[in-house]
Image 1 (cartoon, rainbow, N blue to C red):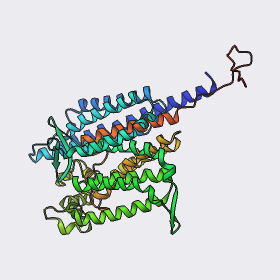
Image 2 (image 1 turned 180 degrees about the vertical axis):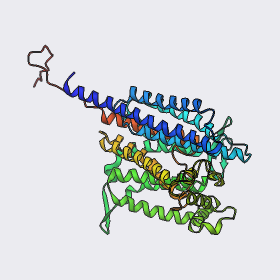
Image 3 (image 1 turned 135 degrees about the horizontal axis):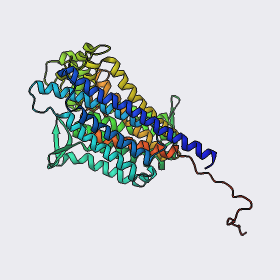
Image 4 (image 1 turned 30 degrees about the horizontal axis):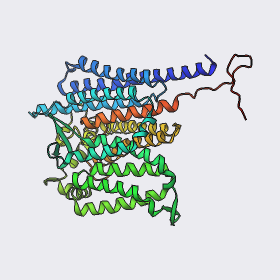
Length: 465
């Protein structure tokens, strides 16, 4: 093996060793938090700590082995970050389960269900790495992915499948299982956006009218952004889902800006967003309520619908302070749906602002690694795909944490890997697998093309003029 080959072999082996070490730290976070919940709430380590820890370790090690076998050059930081967040989320959900059980609630097995969904997510993560050996294959399914995403978004409208939960018609129910097809649709939309923008970015980058030092796009090129705006508004009006509507439109706008490098698209997108938000405030009662709750939450505290969820969340985080009350010493169950929409408030109350900041840093690192993957990717489709997948986490975390802390109105999205929700968890594990696949392709050393030795017996190609 040549000296360069030996160096690259050493580098990628060391990369997987670093990933394994970080995964051990992530397991300490997840299993340690689970044990701390038992000590804080019941005064003893949970009896099932060995079974729980063993299963969580098996899932993480299986994911690591899959990466080692199928993507040896992939980014070594993404998987440990995801494992740490998922483990912490399971522990906090278990803490809420114990609180619900103490109050006599029937449904208090969310942590067990979340572990099952995590198992399915890891299985799909491994399957994606084994069966998708080149991310560029997905470019062939640009329009197919877009059509499939639209079909998935329409499924909740079918009378025998659709199910309305908390006023949002975004669920389907089949054979006793509920699933949110929009979580899969967001991944398919990223694939469709990336494939479309790679083919048409040159035309979309052409400048039109210049206004205040900004070149606006040409009128004939506004079709894609208007179509995406229409889809986002339909999701908002007919499905009553503010979070997904905001996510889909901002996701397309971010990828469009990266593909064309034209600030004019941000201007057009901002104007459309402002107009759509204004129209939604007057036409959609759910949007109007959430905006009013955000402006003055205390005025609607004891009303129905009201801002009790937001106010209780603020009370809990204020009570938690810098280092928190400790597991078992808070009352996070006072916040409705704390295991899903407001899990960050439970973390803030019992683990404090320090833990909230650590969680935000973990998400920031995930987005940073995704953008780094986009920068080093060797093909345009891979760059846009990585940007889109990273933007999913960036936008979702911003609107969720912004809503919980009162920075922006509530949107109803889940916190990736932390919140209870099978649809979101499974889809996000697949997103991480796609990022690792793009990373492996970008970091893999380019094959060396060496000239043959003068005296070697090789076939020489003679060009005939």
